[in-house]
Image (tube, rainbow, N blue to C red; front, top):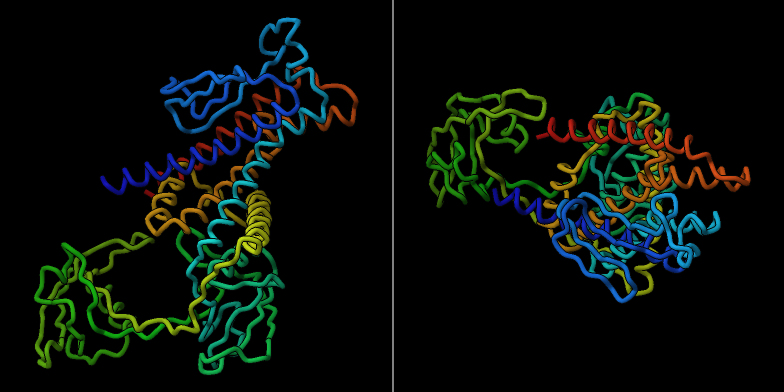
Length: 456
């Protein structure tokens, strides 16, 4: 219940900020173009707060926080007194109308830059993208890894951490190839001067973004510090919590076979659902056996697996593997603008791949997934929440630019046709377009909501 309330609260804050930015873009440019704004509303439905400003605009905070709108004086909607007709939206030039409509999505892109600016100003703790192996039979198998190597670029795009590597790889879903640039690390003590580039054949590279990582499915073996088989944590109500195991116990053997590595231990546990296993552990210099029965659970594919409920101790990350993405007041702006552009480019690529079939409609997300993402990012801290806001703001801006008549992009399409033809698109044609656009948008929203409930 607490998780639900936290996710809901984070979702409302995130969506409120993004909607306010979007609608303020329309509002600000409309006022600058001399259009009278009658109402500025955040949310739909019954007003829970309202105030009329000195400028005559009614500012409203409404009950349903799933959108907002700016109501402008318009002769196509209502009768306008003669003395106010020069302030009506429909009386403005086509370029002024284009500016007013485009201002909403542009405000979302500006908001993303601002959010990322403060994120980089505060500093983002990251890890360098270092690999120690590749998986046979995968696209990356041709890379010969004899020592730890840091990924420095994906298809010419510089990358600094794993998040940037993942973002760059996602943009290549469905492509026939991509290139990876790596620099060897000598004993993790410093960068070698040589750079090696590999062109990977990705024609057979497929993965489910909901369940799999583009990094591991490509075949890149991520560097991780050594795992020590000493229990660092025990989950409440788990099989381990109901046994004699304690935090600090060191695993020595399982079912009489000596412990070799953590993954092998996990594999045995997962294949022992509701089957008793014998663990040999060391505690305070003494060894003894503990009988425990892993509880049955379901993995992401719906298969039954055993769960013990313990976490191992992980060796600390080497200092030279850590990265603090923190910049000054001036540099942060350039970095934020570049990152926003990358997000825009990847988002457009993903929309294109959605239509070509390279990305499944199952990957569309709706408000439930966004709420979960807002809650998770906010839980990790302010810098991660700012990054989440930037990502959603960019996507909101791009979605609104789609040429569907019910969206800003549809209005822009009509206005650009007017620029070319010299006359407005007929009202009847616009009405048909709005109905068509609303139907498509409703279909997409229905698919996204279905995906959300399926994930739940």
